[in-house]
Length: 212
Image 1 (cartoon, rainbow, N blue to C red):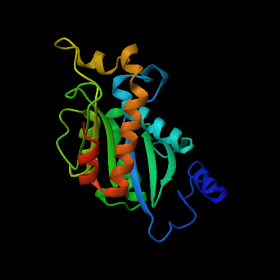
Image 2: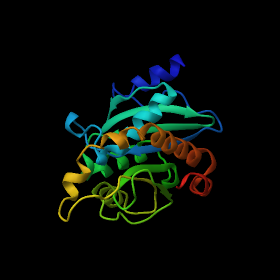
Image 3: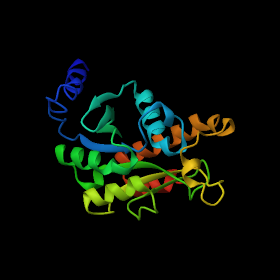
Image 4: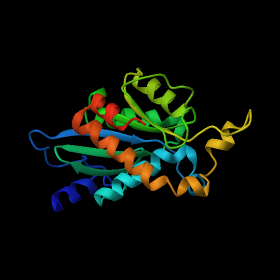
């Protein structure tokens, strides 16, 4: 454990993510949690990706540390190492951070999963897909642009769409109401379980058991 902690702090110092090789059968995944940095965006609908990342890290007892293009926490689930990334590039440039870490860690596209808010789904709905369009989401749009493809998995978390015409921006940058925040721990646990299932058992298993 001490070696892992030292290796992780190497990120801050500009050294490689890990100074020791993964165990023989260990698989590495980049779990990109989308959101905007800054206290004014805390607990807003557009930041549910950040919230999911925080909940996953807390469940594993690990903390986020500053790294290139964002904050990162590294956790292990059985034979998988999950790199939880919260980009510091703001939503519209999320792809810059994703491309950097995918290239740095030499990860294939199937080892990328993006957690993102979705106004097309009611609050609490979860949809994991192997690929798809950006559906107008600027974070997904930039990731596709930087990677040159939309063939990557994304886990959409519904935030609802109860806003008047022209009110989308204010809605997604608004905070969740009290009644939804009370349900948030259960929702974030479900999202975290879906992420683990994706890494351990694959997209098909995760979609079958965790899409709701």
